[in-house]
Amino acid sequence: MLDYRCKTILRFLVKECSEGSYRVFDVKDIIECLPKKIKPDESTVKLCLEYLEKGEYISIKYKDENVCCLTPLPFARQILEAESSQHAKDKKLIKMGSFLYFLVFIFAFLGSFLAIMVYGLIF
Image (spheres, rainbow, N blue to C red):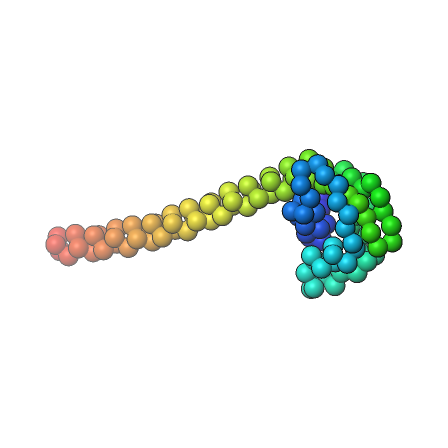
């Protein structure tokens, strides 16, 4: 399971690398892609890159103190695509649930209104 930092780095790498090509990244460039609220540093980025390599999300060809040559693997692309499609499904379900909640409110209001009207006509 990927944490927020690893997912953010993986999204950055997938966005920057074309399909199956290796690219050289400076650690500072990767640090800049992370939000400032998690306070990234070089050791954090290196740990995330090692974790991504062990999980077979990326392939590292060359790694130095400040530079690394890597590419995201197809598994990483599949994970990110599945996550984005799940997010779209969740968004659609929330929208449909809100609409149904609104319809239930309207029909409950109309039902009680009609019940009062019928009661007023009978008694």
